[in-house]
Length: 88
Image (cartoon, rainbow, N blue to C red; front, top):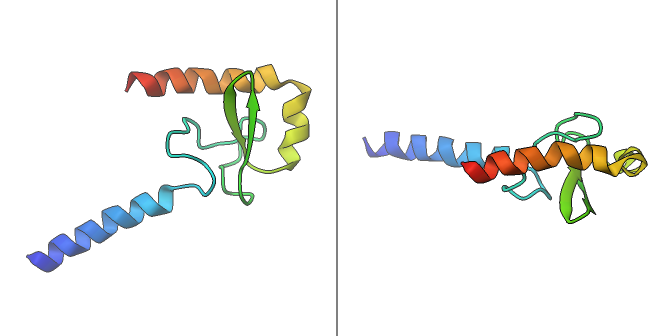
């Protein structure tokens, strides 16, 4: 019985570690890049950019140029997710 509990504990802890994205806080409401729609962490270490007080995480440095072309459009994708997260 004890070994079964240890096994389940290991599985749950391992799943939590595997789901963490390096460089992105667990409180980040989005797990995809707002520019490319790629998974954060899928293109290397994500890039953090802040616009009007809102932190936005991009999948890679290549997305910075597109982000800066219209930052308000991309921040607008983050704000509803932040509000939804705050309600839970």
